[in-house]
Length: 186
Image (cartoon, rainbow, N blue to C red):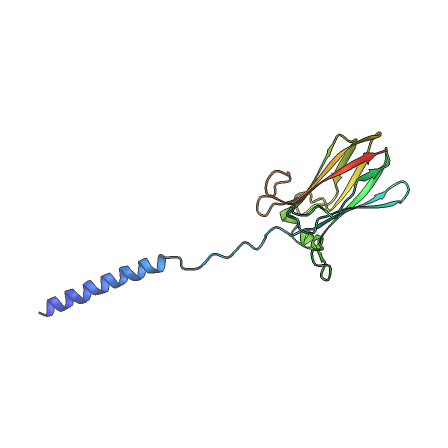
């Protein structure tokens, strides 16, 4: 009888230990949501300064709903002088609530390892070179623009969100905002 009780206790202890080991291996913690989500941007501002004359130029794209239901409120044509050099500063805003405008540029600067601004001139004599960088790769909040002879076309400006995949190119990640500006060089 004594042996039967000991066997029962040992068998119960073994099953209890196995149950506790298996139960401790089950992950019951909900993983956190990614903290580096894309930004809600309604406004892209291109601030240009002509290096020769000091002339300041501002060009905007404003789309308050960002989903394409309503037409953009403002979509400027970028107009530049030929054979000039411009310094550029990019600004991104959320103006959806006019009583509480958010400067997204500060967030992009704080998360610059997760962002790159891509400039793609199409049909126009323009070369754009990013002049700022995070610890490793270029960002594009500031850049230098060099115009050539008279021409026209478009300039695609895309803010890419590249959390964990930034490699210096524009291909990985997702678009936070992309604007195709009409561009005239005269």
